[in-house]
Image 1: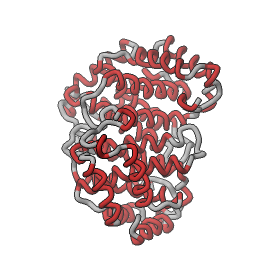
Image 2: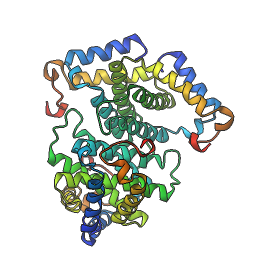
Image 3: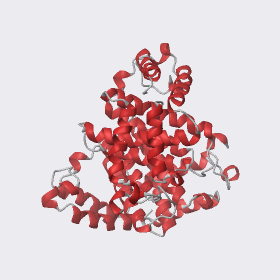
Length: 106
Length: 106
Length: 106
Length: 106
């Protein structure tokens, strides 16, 4: 949603359908979790995933994530960049390199 | 990740730590679901959410979603826009207006 | 919770702490999803799981599932058995044998 | 699955369909998370839940939780009781009474 076109398209889609009334932060958070479950379902029995299906479910996760950011007055890219900065401190390159260990066990 | 700066920052963060080896599509999909659960935890007992905490957890969902898109060779904004187009057909304005009903029950 | 001892122990644990006030069906449903995310975290980067950690997270999922059943006036085992009966019809042995295909594609 | 009847019924259902081959701990853990998402979907837009639908989705969570326990060689009720004991220490009655605060902030 960093691009003004995407932001406008998502907002317009919701506005036309008068769906903003359902989009409380709480409902959007639940929706992100629900769609993440559908994304996970793409690999329930096998890691051999169907890209088209993954793309479609990822779209739902992203759309609700964009809507939540917009509802809270945030820009998705800024949200990501600010956290990246924070995480960099928790996982310094020299300590975290090549390891999937959680920061509190590094 | 539509903005080239965000895309570069996320990629660089991962590359510096040599974490790409852990980022199979399957592991990223699991990570999105895990972080969505942490986002949901922000409202486990009350809808009275702490914006800073929500922002931090939403960042994790978005980052893994961006990483999955990038890994699959997709642009997040294009993923969202293409699905929006598809969903528009499933939920025509005149039928869906003001309703949270699922398309197969509209 | 089919065993009367477990049911009594879970109920007593909650009652002593006066936590029933937080256990609306909605909050319990969210809690099940949150704990499922923590269970999934046990295998975020590898299928090589730590049984003790899995056991501890599975316990949380089960406890909230038991609490939700109890709150709704249901016995967990009856809930499972009734659905098993239903699923048997959707997945007849001769059609479903050895396949992980979803019923609508069988 | 504490009751021997439920345990036998679930095992038999899986054995008849030769589905045990799909039930690695990892696949069962993913399945629990997926079904928890469907359970959450029962309250996506409203807390005014449909009990029959909740019961059906809770059944799926419980069934996969039972299957995971069985696969790991655990009894679900013992899993719950052991964790309850542990949680009792983390949340002593005198400190936790009437509060939904997490133990590390009590």
